[in-house]
Amino acid sequence: MKQLGVLSLLLAIALGGAARAQTQITGDVIGAHDLSPNSTSPVNGRLSGSCLYCHAPHSGVGGITPLWNQTLSTQIYTPYSSTTYHQNGNTQPPPGGPTSLCLSCHDGTVAPGLTAAYGQLTMTGTMRPSDQLGSNLQSSHPFSLILPMKDSADLVATLVSQGKTADPTGAVQLVSGNVECTSCHNPHIQAVDRLSPDFLVRDNSSGQICLACHDPNRVTTGQTNPLAQWYASIHATASNQTASQPDVGPYGTVGRNGCGSCHQTHNAPGAARLLRGPDEQACISCHNGGSNISPTPLNVFAEFAKIGHPFPAGNNTHDGNESAVLNQNRHATCVDCHNPHASSQTTSFAAPPGVRPSQNLVVGVSATDGVTTVFPAVNQYENCLRCHGISTGKIADLKFGYLPARLVAAGDPLNLIPQFSISAISSHPVMHSRSSALPQASLRSYMMQLDGITQGRVMGTQILCTDCHNSDDNREFGGIGANGPHGSKWTHILERRYEFSQAAVPGEAISNLFPNPDLSVNGPYALCAKCHDLSIVLGATSWAGHATHTGTDGLSCSSCHTAHGMGGTSATISGQRLINFDVNVVAANGSSPISFQESPQPTCTLTCHGHAHNSSHY
Picture 1 (tube, rainbow, N blue to C red):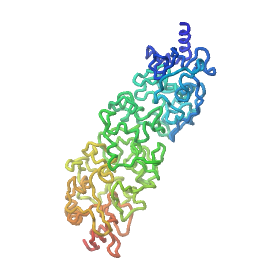
Picture 2 (picture 1 turned 135 degrees about the vertical axis):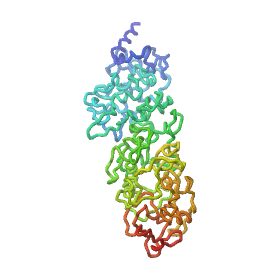
Picture 3 (picture 1 turned 180 degrees about the vertical axis):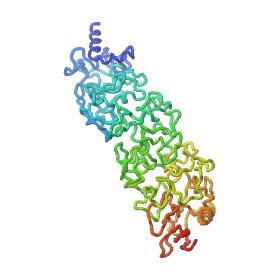
Picture 4 (picture 1 turned 30 degrees about the vertical axis):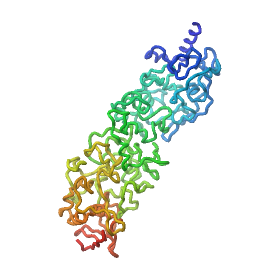
């Protein structure tokens, strides 16, 4: 009884911090840290005193307070690092400090039960894999920082200036001004957080421990807070039920899982930024149509399985600190186009060209020079220009289908900026409003839904990139799938079918003709029919030649028209009405160069499908 009294007093004095939490939990609360023979811990020894495995009753290891009994590790650790980590760096945990004491068991180099007072105790069982951190701690939250800490836009204002967290309960604390294991964990009370019994100092639902140090609402001059708009985001507010498993967190809903839905504080599979999976793999647990979430979110990853944007492969991975312009490193991870801290569900569709709520606070590039970073992107196309502007290393990937070779281009044919520019002779109105100088008789008042019958969004003066490049079953136009250019069954991630004329030899026979084409949503030019009444295109109201070229002969619109815009200037091609010939299909007429003039009447000189066209032909 006397020994029991001494041990009780020792625990109360040396580890008094536990007292503040014991008001919430009663009874034996040491949990898995009780290694005595009859405990429920996965590791057990022969000593009956639960405190003795960590604490010595009289003298411990090297005079360390609080009378430490477990042999300390001498391991050298590799701490956390990433390109977005703004602190001064990490040191090795001071011997005898709170983190060093925890790692004396949890780094796996010293067996539990190797005591100073009793020598090596016989132990049975093994620690859970999730409790074994190892010596490479790059995938664990940083600790033992080099002081003084460095302030940043996403930290609570008092953290560096006063060494004080924003936790209203006072449970989350810095230790001597530093982040240590005991800032988040109380080793003596396992279930303060009953849903996550991991010795947390307080309930961590909705990421409350994380938000004790990280502040989404902080605004600092000249700095960007990467957590801005978190509280209003879909990941912070979603009430979708979650399975209680490591993949998605223990708190029952996406919103209550909070930061833990995507981040893992220890042994994170995606070490940089402690993600539950590298880049898009952190998103797949919820957005793959599986059973982790109820109601199940739309299956975005099924779209990528079609003809989709390319995920990283090899060395072309995303990094949180990369340049907005992706030179020589094109990739398409979820976070290239979405900001998970700010993204919200798109429930209504505003007029173009603004970004949709699903792309709140996403990075973009200015269409003026193709270089200047725009954060946040205001217009949807600014985000697309990260890859589809002046970036170097672009390729025409064959998996997206046939790509026309336009007669007139401004240098890089894959740079869309000059093609959509206000200075382009003609272009689809993506980066600027459409001109009234050349009215289009075929233009509808409303875009058509995917069924080709029902009216959709009103036809405004501008369109979005995603009005053409979109999932083939997207919700905005009447489908049941995800919005956006994740993937499509049609080439070039097009929302609807669009056939390109192709010839083995320019000027000679075209291999895929569609005479008297089906003008419905099932036909070869269904994408054009979304905005243009094809019956007018093939009639005399638009241009009489369409009836012969596209109607009777079956040539595609792509033979003569570019889908984006006239991206350069030419002495022979005037370029109105998106006319810019595909030189894989058409050829010169003898010694005369390929030419087109809009006025005084449309005339062209070229050879196509074995037919010679002279300037006086029409």
